[in-house]
Image (cartoon, rainbow, N blue to C red; front, side, top):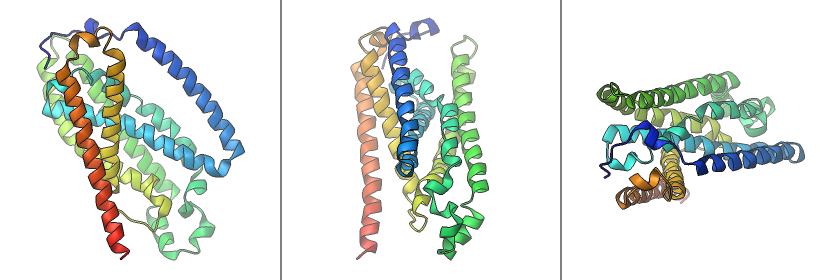
Length: 279
């Protein structure tokens, strides 16, 4: 655990960060252009691929937010060196809000419950669609999910900035803990319902009670992997090289191993239940 005293000027990103941002933007624009081409060339496959990619990047943003809340709740030196990285990651949630719109406007191309002609063949699913799986319900819950997610991310980021001021220390710490204790519960419930709406309903006849936890574990694992990659890039340059020690690196590796095991356990549990049910 580092004992160095840090201030705002000490934590400015090195010039290489701007270079990486610029190159990433170029790659992102090129990938977006290819996606537009793909939407016209293979429209039947495009939205399935788009949903897959969307859930990964949304999960990375939410995983970063979950790690920030976990750090504020339990404390420890492991979170100090990756805190700004995680805060930056969670502040991409407004972008993820916008990127969901193509899915929202093309529900019938992804979900059979959004196609009235299909529902006539499945009366039980039609009942569920009438009450829960319908455009208005999906739209309402989508707005609620992101309002809660970005609301928590905004407060965490704002208070983090205030904590850099001399008078913001102890007050911010108490607020962080209060929000994080409730926020982790809200995150777990909202992502569970979100993946039911957006992913599990792709096969509306299939039900899994552990599905949300699979995504929770996967998102936090992805965020820790992202943090390790970023700290690996920045570890040879100031300020990261002055504050990152082998202790933090080992801690992050242990977290990664922990969530790999949790994710594998959840997946095995689901597979075992499915296998037993097919006997």
